[in-house]
Length: 371
Image (cartoon, rainbow, N blue to C red; front, side):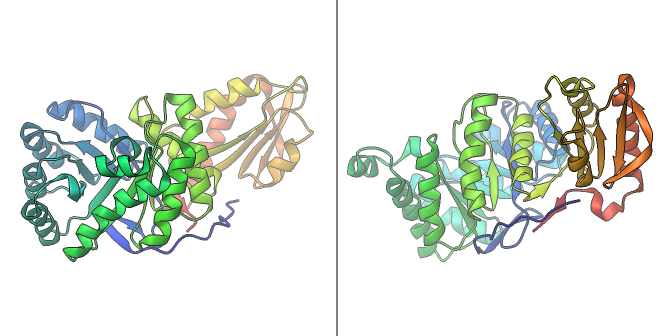
């Protein structure tokens, strides 16, 4: 019961971040960033593995010092997911992590300083097939650009991004992606729209410093949703002041709502009202918790009464429609003979979902990609 997305995607070139393609017709990759101390190798490895388990395609790690670069070497050996190193100012750290097998460098060439240093990093990246992400941020624009525009504007972000792009162009390096993040939705969206017309490389989307779990999720969904619906964006990170695991979950919820990517179970649930014949909210919460380990894409409708229940069940893989004492159960839109006891819904439905997953074609199991 999976519908394809009506979105027409911006055409871009493709780069490889480790074994993950970004851009072109590749699925939109989901990223997060560790918030452990990079020098704490065990804690960082543990967090990266946890992010990978919930579906992170790429993980970024900040490498602020040479000690962190040495730690990065040990971290890289213990994880499978591609790693991006976040580096500011010190070009020697970039050269060091490149030697240690980094999959992408997040670096702004203009911030490294002298031409010979920039060239050293770019030559090294070319030599080792490492792509670069140019990351422009509304909060850290170059002083002369700040003075020229007076405040961060979409045009100011674009000018900063193109300054870095021009350096890479001059050095004949085209394996890069660009982000123009801002904490204001309209500022970020405006900058990405301008950038999308200027370059052919992939774009990394984000609303930076979006906020706490709820407000940041809403802000990210609005900003990234506007861009993704226009076909702009090849990889994204939801920036939350929360556990990075939540960033991945919210990112998938955004992609799922636009039918771009689906991972795990899509619960279609009513907000519940006095017509409900069972406790919808607790049923959905319990099932979401119990089925967090599932990466198979499946639509499951849980509707408390017969007003919308049968209609939603028609377009779901599995569905429940509330009625007194025992609720109706549907598979692939067809009403089944068996009815579910309302007091035991969670156990019965979990068993049905797991049984359905075990019979599915393995190729469809992980992450149904519509485009």
